[in-house]
Image (tube, rainbow, N blue to C red; front, side, top):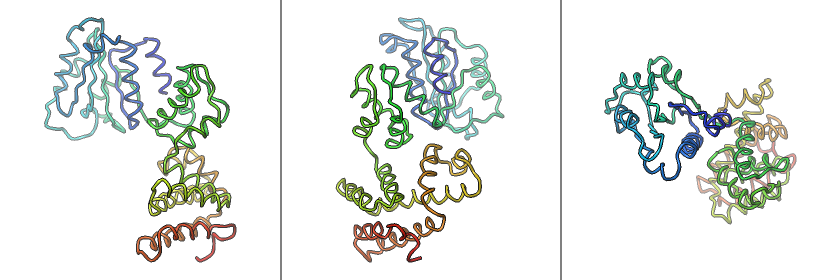
Length: 344
């Protein structure tokens, strides 16, 4: 768990070797930055941080740097990006001395911290060098955070400024901002700045300050449709038009969301739970949780009809048979209570 991993660094329980990999780039960058802040002062940072890219530079060059005594400090930090030789990726033009790397892993420099960092979903566990690094390094797999981990990450980030969240405020933040960590961090920093050190972030503060993405606005539009609040759904649509969003793009996102509801509904009816559905559809579990709530408001037949109606609207828009805004307005008006199954 990333919070526990960060906790070790903050307590200065440091390793000479780190392996950071995964698909969540924000976590990789944040972990690297935390290491640098913890180990080095601002003055030392300028002289004792070096970054190498294995797609451009041989790894042995970076390791030679790691074996060089630090200047104006006790430690050096060597960041080695894109260590593709730990994966099943094909060899590139750069020639890496893996024997030298294996030797270094077995006996790392006592005055350097070497960080291998790459955006890789998985490593090649069959390789000797991969087995060695996983055995001797502190390893962080930066995968998308589960809902519980997201809550912990948000609390940890807010807690650094002495800020707390009121009950339900975190869920509202996730609902509005989504689960992308870069977006969440930006919105969280804004909220922390607003309430100030030692403050409490309330639900209404989140609703007032958090910027909604187009995807989140479409989610709200779907929410209004599920509740048969068509007048409010139309207002969301008109607000999107005011922000220069294209009806065709809105319709495409609407199709994506209703397709997700249909898939979730189908899998739920066959006994699959939230985590299983998230794994099958490769969608974040928190999004599946929200989709399960929305899908419960429809029957499978209704969702199938909605998908057909969206396909008809898409054809009308793309063929120029009708004004695009009018197509969306008529589609939303059609979705009043009892209208989902008509015109099949």
